Image (cartoon, rainbow, N blue to C red; front, side, top):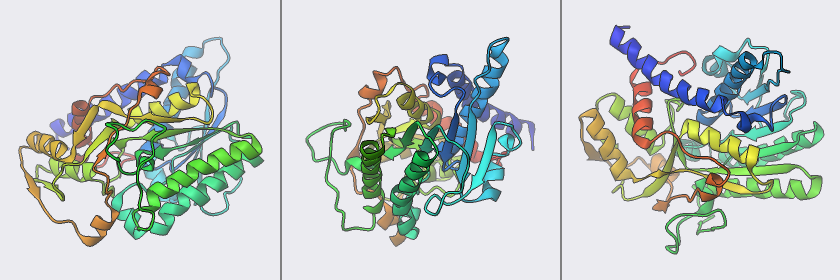
Length: 371
């Protein structure tokens, strides 16, 4: 690897790590969960990996600053289906005393992992090809998987459940609002294959409410905008991921629609902090939108920005049938994050900074844990 390539890799991860360090040092963010055990599902995914990286870094920061004080470290139980993939993605944590990995499918019986004080359910199919190719699994992880985890929490003394939800629960904008607030509900055609993802997220949210009413298990629901960042997987088929792969290769950006859809986005470390803020300061039973409102942009605008960065151009291409059937039909899906900002949260990474960081991550050879 040449020196420039090595520096590019370092710059990319320096920015990602700088954000993790900034969050790991926010003492108030960790008071609620310090000294506890946190179970994270979907631990090898884009958001799951970031959460694991962040909590494990917090342990290092708190240990160094503890001095004579009691150490209040956080034990992490990371769940995913594929251990080989997990060893690559989470290898830096593998032999740490406070890290435990369990290979299991949350749609099946969850093996005993020990007491989990907090459960963050981030396991879900989250991109178009999987909505088509694994339509049953898409629904199952948000419904059956959520129920299994709620049951696990009830049996093993969980204090709090965090169900990571999505902007897609709002459905299509009815034309009566510019941005979705947490009490908005738009149109969804439930009799389609593509409805499996948003409808199952809605059902997962309803399950959390049912378990709180029946068993007294507190929960919170962060609803994420479209997330991107250097922990994205190469297999991700979302438009933003495809655009960045092309930009990283210096190729033309392929737009498979007119590109008039306007969405909210958020960088992965800001998404992770939004999840933790909702858990630390949010009101139990509430939902909180997580979005960088300075990063609202059309697909066409996003494609153009990345093409300019790559020195290429935007070209139009018809999508393949399996891609088309997995696409969202929403043309305007922007989130109002005022409720989360009232808790003290704010996005730290601008879209320009986030895109540059992510394109660099895609342009290099896979680093440890990023294959």
